[in-house]
Length: 162
Image (cartoon, rainbow, N blue to C red; front, side, top):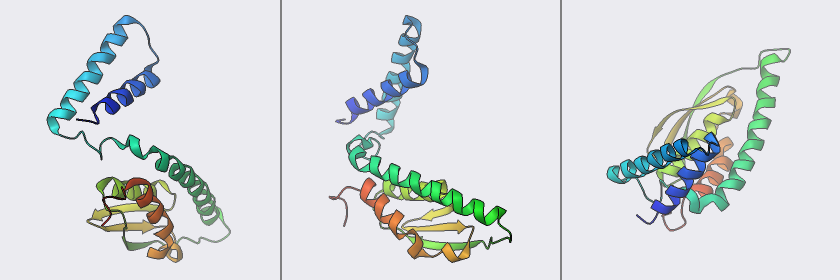
């Protein structure tokens, strides 16, 4: 339960940032909603280190900045392929083994692939991710190594790596 206060603060800030309402009626609704979410999370046993990634923010923020750059580069590459003089689309499927050890790390890597235009994570089975890529020449496990390393470093704890 040591992560409960962090989750309480995060949910409160999240609620207020989305609503911005300060009337007593809405503040009471906010308290009820946040406490209900905390109670349900505690009853389900999902409050823990993986469910509360606040301690990873110093590593996650640089990763998100790097990922946004990759998304922009990939957008430009996909647009060039699609509207170029010749159709240069040659789809392929590739199986990638991830270095991430936690569920959070695997989810971060899989979602990062899907967020990047031209690639979609189709399936995750243990350490293996099946990825559909728009261009066959970029569909190699080596082309995903940098993203895999960065996602694993941002999401996994050093203590958990094996």
